[in-house]
Length: 205
Image (cartoon, rainbow, N blue to C red):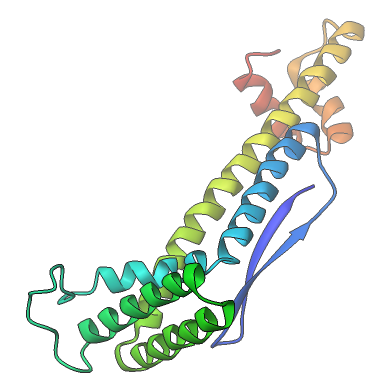
């Protein structure tokens, strides 16, 4: 059940689409089950207010000029720091409303998070900053999953090669490694040179 995640973009918006295929092996199935759980966990996280605004909140708190104490001078109106502080204040209002008010009050407050973030994005290219950070994390995750999948494929291929070599040697104990590689390459859908290289790395003759 190979798991493949693709980011689809139209130049403005983007979404992640997940594609599932048939399982290649038990090892791949175990790996892909973990990948599916990670995707579901990430989806559930993004279904919450905190999950949706996590990246924006980190950007706001890391914006230069944002006050760490309330007795510090306020940032200039309309500056990056001003937008960051306003967004953080509205986020706090949303969280308070989620606990103490009807859901529609929290929803109305949450709209202002989007309004302020959209203004800031248009003025200061915050969208580029958010996208770059998200892309780096996504690339790291995809790279790790790809490496795990390659290792699973290599393990399965080596297991098949070891078993095929054992069966071959049982009936042809005196044949050369070259002859064995030629005989095994076809059934294993591998090149003769690849079979010889893997046998050499596995210490088999």
